[in-house]
Length: 150
Image (cartoon, rainbow, N blue to C red):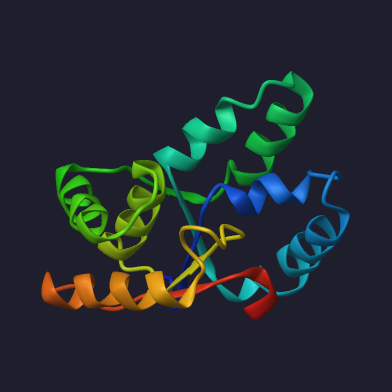
């Protein structure tokens, strides 16, 4: 039977915040939504997320992060994702891996993308430009939210 829950892409900032006690308020919000709201979604991460979490220096923290996401569906960036990310980068100033997170979420049919990255991803100017690019390239728009908005 097909999963009928809406698809929600989690960028690396979400699982990272779950165990990040240096930003206690963000950690508590992340833990609360993880347990109270995320069950309403089909959760998706990417190979980019796995790679970033795998680069966590502290081995104990890295293992906890990997355990947190190990049952989530993982989408793998493909050439079409890279092409769409390159379209974002033509007009947006952001790291390529942030553009790839957005492109992967878009290409794999996620209705929403959840992130704590207010600089590059969760800001009104970039959200509009991202969705304009998506429409111009024949893709659906995506709702980009912070955990505070979910």
